[in-house]
Amino acid sequence: MKHSFTVCVEGNIASGKTRLLEYFKKFSPIVEVLEEPTQKWRNIEGHNALAKMYEDPGRWGAVFQSYSQLTMTQLHTKPHTCPVKIMERSLHSGRYCFIENLHKSKVMPDLDYVVLTQWFDWLTKSHDIKVDLIVYLRTRPEVVLERVKSRLRPEEQCIPLKYLEDLHNLHEEWLINNASILSPAPVLVLDANQDLPSMYKVFEEEKAKILFGLAAS
Image 1: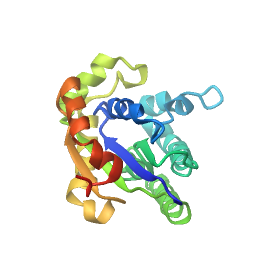
Image 2 (image 1 turned 180 degrees about the vertical axis):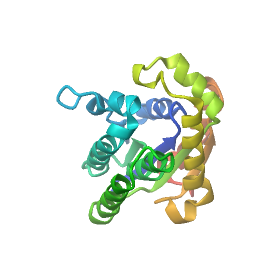
Image 3 (image 1 turned 90 degrees about the vertical axis):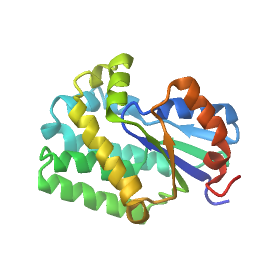
């Protein structure tokens, strides 16, 4: 096989992506799990790009998103070692949710938006950015706000509800309203408003679809 079966787990901040990835790690060596490269984002030769982006998105939003595009492309094109690759987010959510949000909120200038969009278009056309399934952890903004507060990540403590609402709406536009146009793969929607034990039951019930595609029974 030229490709592994590639699954991208999408959703708002604190929607439960890390929990899903942790659950499916137990299927190693069938499954390779690739988390978002947040450690790289927090330390670019001593610079915390993630923190700077939250502190001053007008100044650092485009810089952060360009580095995010680079690191996510590295994950997409990483030679696979297992039949199934599960990634936390994708190059596509960066474009359709996070870059789009910066521009729609008038934080990102038009020129930055155009340049990043052209980079995305070139990367997806010229590199092997194959996605076979998207798992969308659909979660209400009020729920993820409570989770953000409870997990106490330093960069996230300034995140307001409005930001999470805007990201939620963009995920809905991308993966629900315009999935047939914008999504690179079929979408499996999971209700991720539930507590962790309930979500583990959902992961178990849906594991065949997540590992082998929506046609799996």
